[in-house]
Amino acid sequence: MLLFPTFPWKSASAPCYGSAAMTAVIHPDIRPRINSVASDDLNAAERERIHAKSALFAPPEARLADGRRDLVGLSREELATLMTEIGEKPFRAKQLWHWIYHQGATDFSAMTTIAKPMQAKLAEHFVVSRPTTATEQTSVDETRKFLFRFRDGQEAETVYIPDRREDRGAVCISSQVGCTLSCTFCHTGTQKLVRNLGPAEIVGQFMAARDSYGEWPSPSADMPRYLSTIVLMGMGEPLYNYENVAKAMRIIMDGEGIALSRRRITLSTSGVVPMMDRCGDELGINLAISLHAVTNELRDQIVPLNRKYPIEELIAACRRYPAASNSRRITFEYIMLRGVNDSEADARELVRLIRDLPAKVNLIPFNPWPGSDFQPSTRQQLAKFANIVMDAGFASPIRTPRGQDILAACGQLKTESERQRRSATPEA
Ligand code: SF4
Image (cartoon, rainbow, N blue to C red; front, side):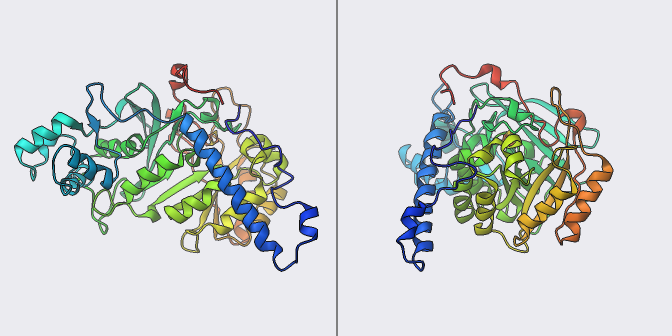
């Protein structure tokens, strides 16, 4: 079941622009502008609707049962306000920021530049927490999967994928518990959306993963990092939880804390077109598109969000994406499903679709999971497909599945949180 029903005036074959009768009486010179105004209005209305739906799945307040507030996930301004509320000077926020996000401290008594009475006062009102690690599994290829449990008992998975040649690696972070989108090849998609994750829970996944590798204090910009990139490709559709994701990413990018460059963060979307512009304008992080099919007919089936935002609207939004350039290409993720989307004709159509974009293509061999009907493409077919894309001038690496033995590979994440879905959670 989709969370966001299709508007009656908008379908895969009829994008939402002005009617033919209306355009017939408009001077051709001003038609494009009027159409773009109409399109902007529709996007704004659509964004409002997405925010309203997102609010229905809001995370619980980041507060302990004893009333103490978690300081993780707050903006600098919010931290300063809290300091004022307990009768302290706002500059304390800067000190705390340093200890929380640069040093990785979770205990106020470790914050040695803060006087002991003040440490005690902070501990009386606040905590600096992490999600609990429910399980931690390490694959034979050193990929590590964490199942993190949050304060209300909900869980989400985070995966660290180390680079096998250098001391660096990507942390794949979840943005929701479950997902509404039901992409048919994705194990997570079989788990209903329980709720959105809050900023503390999103940042907390990264901080807890760094705890596991002891990577504190945050390395300076010119130093190597073991946990060197973030990919928002875990459970959930990040653009359906944009506000919380954006707040978490701003914290992670802040130069006086974790200080991870926007160039090292990639958000992967199935194509929530109205939110893509905002993400590019406000965060400027890299973009990845879960494309997986090159015709609306097939994509409607395997990525059902396509019925709402068809391929042509998605590609147009990629063209507008402000943070894309030749040095920061948009990644098109393409899961290779035997006999479904892996023909040479599909490869040629893919090339046609992305021909004028700064793009690269990640070809992902399908990772089977219990109950799935798909088969991975053969090696020969993968190679043929990759060659067509490469010959057209696009990098098209075939991704080596990582962490398969612990179900940590792409599309395999799923938790048991669904069983605990709160009865109060609204139905989609
Ligand atoms: S691929 Fe992403 S958007 Fe699609 S069901 Fe899986 S988690 Fe959700």
